[in-house]
Length: 125
Image 1 (cartoon, rainbow, N blue to C red):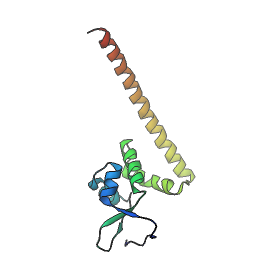
Image 2: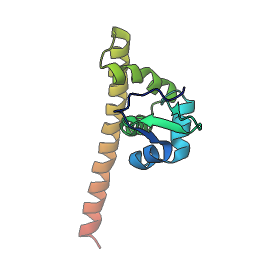
Image 3: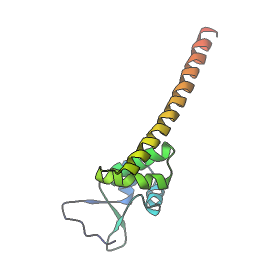
Image 4: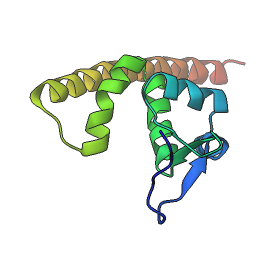
């Protein structure tokens, strides 16, 4: 896709997106390959992204960290873009939320146990 953006919307290069999101350039390219991020091309062929790409890449990173696959993240993106969902999408969002909450609960239980061990070991040198 060649650049046809309005003059008032500044496009950013891949390096700016990567730095802003705290990821590698390679990660940004991977997200593009997975269909999670869209780049336009300058006349010289450089990848250019909308400024909101940094926020989107951070969201993608969070979803990967939470255990979602690239396919599942791709299913979430229309919800992210439009703010609207259908019944199937809402069910999927709720299911992912429940899965992540269970993971958080497990991690909190592990943290509580570690706190107990730390407390015990602090009182018994």
